[in-house]
Length: 138
View 1: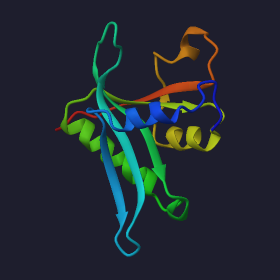
View 2 (view 1 turned 180 degrees about the vertical axis):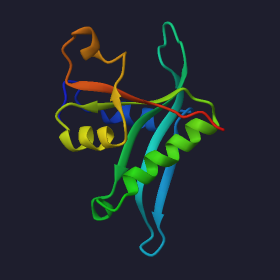
View 3 (view 1 turned 30 degrees about the vertical axis):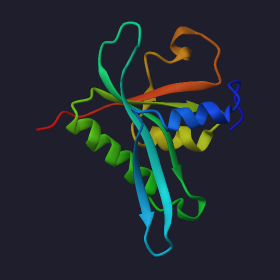
View 4 (view 1 turned 90 degrees about the vertical axis):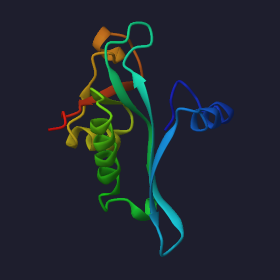
């Protein structure tokens, strides 16, 4: 997706290799391929004045040949279970407003515009920060 941020491949590589980066992979053993993955970290909701621990989804990707088979939903469900097991308050992610498919996908999963999203402050941005509360373990 085009964004005002642009794409810096060196910065992206550093993000993906960060010591806090965690991954969930779905493999297709029959083809020896990665069908999809979610890249996440355990973070706080605000660096300057943190109020809760969150699982921050940096990226989710499902290979085109595996799309529309529920893998994205499965990956996000697995991330939710991890967030629940680690006592995170919510799952947070950033999505470009122009990515209508992603916006609809997260809406179906119950994500809403987070209180920290620029649009909540009337600030212009080409993205939204979305979040979903993590159910507490019983």
